[in-house]
Image (cartoon, rainbow, N blue to C red):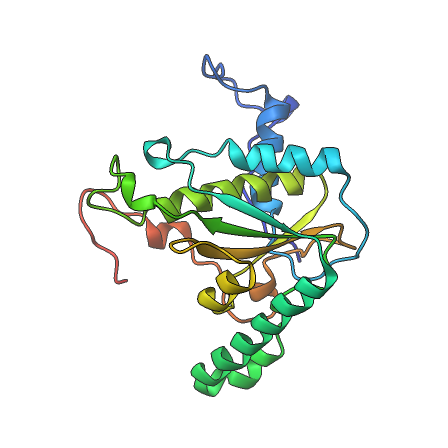
Length: 234
């Protein structure tokens, strides 16, 4: 069963109050919310290709993400060599085994999950943080991790744009970052943040894969929302 999400009303279902001055049309607004709610972290791909003009649109969308102090900390490495894909796949499999051991009693359950699509996706991109990030102080003096938060915004833009284009995207973070940096010949101070698998899919999951596989469930928004002070249990 598909997840149920409160999409904004359109057409005859729209509420009577006038839209805000700078708001999108009902159809445009519904499309934005649809992309958000139907985005999935994909692991199953159908091969094929991503047309160059589409890939450029997606990367342009990523590059238009917000960033703290306008530092733009994202760098994308397009993995085109088959041999290099196999090397990255092997790194992920190594960490998959280590993660399974660390999970203890959930090891067998974890090993049944598909955690990557590196060998199946039409495109593989590695998002990395560049060296010299310590020079960006604006917005990071007390929260240096905001460079990672900014790069995550770029991935989210890419994810939503990919969904709108009918393409799946999966963010893989199960790898040894030092080993991947060495494999991709990254300079000292650069840091890989994710392996992004991108391409056509046979279908999108009806719900997040880890929820579909009963690994975890999305918690209610109300559990995450507080007024004025911390009142939640965790």
